[in-house]
Amino acid sequence: MQNLKLKAKSYQGIIDRYKRYLPITDKTPIITLREGNTPLIYSSYLSSVVGKNFSVYLKYEGLNPTGSFKDRGMTLAISKACEGGSKAVMCASTGNTSASAAAYAAKAGIKCIVLIPKGAIALGKLSQALIHGAKVLAVDGNFDAALELVREITAKYPITLVNSLNPYRIEGQKTASFEICDDLGRVPEFQIMPVGNAGNITAYWKGYKEYKAAGKIRELPKMLGFQAEGAAPIVRGHIIKNPKTVATAIRIGNPASWKQAEAARDESGGLIDMVSDKQILQAYSLLAKKDGIFVEPASAASVAGLLKLTDKGYFHSLPIKKATIVCILTGHGLKDPDRAVNTVKNPKVIKPNLKSVLKEIGY
Ligand code: F0G
Image (cartoon, rainbow, N blue to C red):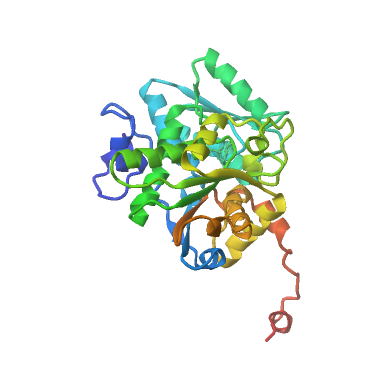
């Protein structure tokens, strides 16, 4: 396709980089926006909070083309949909999946239909789906209800489902584990991430297991997942009918990959726990102020989880002397600017003269 006409040796996206681990053939048209290759950033602040001999890294997935990790799965899901001759794709979304599906469908020249929970997605995400030309419908219900409808419709009509129930989404998203291992030169001991519909934890775990089978890493990490307290079906062990959290991206009461998330937790000897909205927003501010990284609230659940586990003495209770911990920062803060502005004070209005400015800045 277009992008492969470029002869330059520049980075070409996750399908090109990891093709030997992905279900593609010479016939697969590669629809890419050069997703992936996101930075793994060392946090001296968080490392010092966890303690001596612990290194904390942040995998900044907000730097993908549409601002979230969904692009890794979407490049493959849309490429395979096109290979199969599909002319339309559909998803339910708390926002990021729809932004990504809309962008990749636009690039592929196919139709995109998205169902979003009415009034419950961040403005940045809605604006993305709209401007890329998707047919956006707001359902007067939550994400779980929207996903149910999408499953029904895509089972009956010639429309490809591009939620993470689509196995190609998981295949694409697993490349983030490969990048982490390639960048570190080894596997981290722990990986911490937010859990919503549970596709991403499923994907990362698959990626680590495949890298081990390929001889690229010797061990596997413990998978530590965090849900929001008001939307924590896996932690509580039952469906949440009316999920509530400021982290709208993970406001999900009946995750599609529930069983797979539990398998990742249990096979890795990890855990799935929950954090409160207050803890999420504290981590959100901390990341911005101490690390210079702006994420959306759902992404901050991983760092809120890191801080919760540190407070509980989790890391020091294990028989390890030193460890590398990777927190996944799933989406960019610009997705949800309202939340940032509401979390801090608005700028003070002053007179347009030197005296007023100097007085305010203390000079
Ligand atoms: N973080 C962000 C920013 C997300 O958008 C999502 C999911 C998650 C974490 C959780 O990932 O669902 O694989 O467990 N967003 C989906 C969406 C549901 O529609 O954009 P998950």
